[in-house]
Every structure is written in structure tokens, then in C-alpha cells.
Image: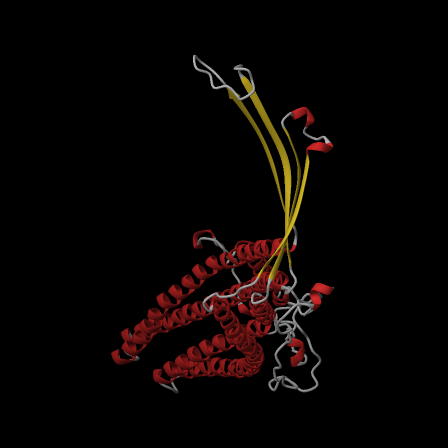
Length: 465
């Protein structure tokens, strides 16, 4: 406690950031419905659940983040070592022989005879640097904060990967639906083309009408390869996200029609600060930067080291551990920087500039979090409204096409009216599929913006000076 009172440098305080009272795009007085940790299960798809389970285990970005976390934890362990004494053990044995051959080397006083000497010693040395100014504690605090930042980065990467899996899977389902619509429209166009060709033979219609329908069918046929290519590319992307080659990825038939849309609503904006791992990461990096500033200030002050050794030394091994052979020593040293060519002041300036940079990064992360939620809420609201309107347009276009086809059979309208009705229906169907996909993607973005059910751990790095 006394040593802690001697610590130098600024105490850490979280930078002030303006917080909105409420989210502008959220309905007023709506009860909060924050995401769960397994938020993707709300869509009601076992296949999506399985894909995300595989991604959490095999996604390459998550595996890289886990390895980075393990390295950061090891760095924290290394940084904590100077706070404990260092103990080294030594043992030695030495034997010498005097005198040999025709001209022996004899030990003085041995009477010209061969002589042997033995020397044995064991000792232990202890060294410890008094952390009088808190330099080592600040180094440990910085390493622990960096390890926490790596842990939060892993959570951010995992949330991003899971969201990408869901978004890509929704895109695949939408591409399937779009491909199915294109094939149905092509089949209808070809059926009408066959009917017109028969009527051309009977002299009911002219060749221009048949050519016009043939061109429409050819245009619809030409869109199918592009849709198939887009679908295959999305499947390849999904394979990468779950850590599989695309050849090993097998997806069951599914459609966006079968999915549910969970209720999702943010609470107070202030609560968002504890639900976003990227904000926690930015805060941990800021704590580490503050600790580095404190450590750079402490480097200007003297360092005090204590050393001691104890052991035994004897010329006979059987008398090594007798009281008369014991050795003890102790020493203390003080080191004070006198001239270092500006290295210490330069390092302090670097650390202070880094801290100011990390303050801006933290504040940017907070503002971005609010912006992400507002953007996702707005997109979800208007995508839902657009989907409802597009569904009405599809129903009316389908009714209009069936009515025009009946009128064509009755001979009250020409083929041009049918072609226009077909094109209108095809356009409305595609617009409806895109609006529905936009609603699901907006929901995923909102889950991600709200932290995906992540909560800040109960313990805090902010304790202490």
C-alpha cells in the first residue's frame, strides 16, 4: 500500500462522451428487447444454427483472434514477472591434480609427491527491484489491458463472423428464390410462345407478335446464368466463413418464406456501451495507453534493486553443508538516469500522443455504435414497409396478368397487353424478393449493432490508479 502511494502519473478516467437520450429511429415507449447470445435461433432455422456452430469452431478469423488472445495472455504473464523476486541456483565442483611424468609439477609443501585439491560450492542468488514508483505495476497493468483488448477483439470478430454467416445464408436463400421466379417466368413465356406459334400456323396472329414473345423469352432465359453464378459465389463465400471448401458444403432446400422475424428493440443508448465488445476493446486499449504513460514517467525516477546470496563452499564434499562452510551476502543498489540523450522524454511524448489517439478511437467507437443502431433501425423499418407494399404490388400484378390472359383468349386485347403484364409481374416479384432480403439483412445488422447479446464482464479494468 505504501509503494502504491508512490506511483506516479495520471490516474485513468474514462473520457466523457455525449450520449443521446434515446434512439431517434426506435418507436417511443417501446419496451427494450435486447438480443440473446444465440440471437440467430430466433429466425427458426436449424440449418442456420448448424452453420453458425461450425463457424464458431472453424472460422479462420476467429481462430486467428483466439491465437492472438493466447499470445496477449502470455505477454501479461511475462510483464508480471518483475513484480516477483528472481531466484537463481548455482552448483560447482572442481578437482585439480599436481605432479605427473618424469618432471612432475608438485604442489608447494607436498614433499614432491602427487597432490589433489577439491573445491565444491552450492549457492542461491535472489534479486528484486523495488517497484517504488509503480513502473513494473504499470507495465503489468498495460499488458493485462492489452490481453483484455484481445479478448474483446475475439468477441468482436466472432460477432462479425456470425453475422456474416447469417447475411450470406439469407443472400443464398434470396438468390434461390430469385432463380426460381426467373425459371417460372421463363416457363410461362415459353408456354405462351408455343401457343402463339400454333396460332401463327392457323393464321390467327402474325409473325411480328411471335417474334416479340420469342425475344421476351430469350431475355428471361439470359438472366438465369447470371443468377446461377451469383448463387454459386455466395455458396463459396459461405464455405469460407464456416471454414470449409465449397465442395464440402451441402445446403438443404430452403426459402425466406419459411423464416421468422424476431422482435428486436434497443433500450437506452447508455446501455449500449456495455453491450458492444468493440467499445470494450477500445476502452481496454485506452487503459493500456494510460498505463504506458505512467510507466514512461516512472522511468525518470531512480530504480532500487536488492540482491542477496546464500550458499556453502568447502574443499571436502562431506563437509559442504557444515555451519563453517556457509556463505551469506546482501547488497542494495540505486540507479538514477543522468543523461540519456532525450530517450526517456521522447518515449513519454510518444506514449502521450498514443493515449490522445486512443481517446479519439474510443470516442469514435462510441459514436459509431450509436450510428450503427440508428442506421439498422431505419433500414429495418423502411425495408419492412417496402416489403409489405411490394407484396401488394405482386398480388395485383398477378391478378392483372391472369385477367389480361383471359381477355387475350377472348380476343378483346392484343398480345402487347399480355407482354406488358408479364414484365410488370416479373419486376414486382424481383422487387419483392429484394425488399424481403433487405429486411432480413437489416435485422442481422441490428443484432450486430446491438452487440449480439454480448455483455461486458462483471469485473472491470478501471479499478486502481
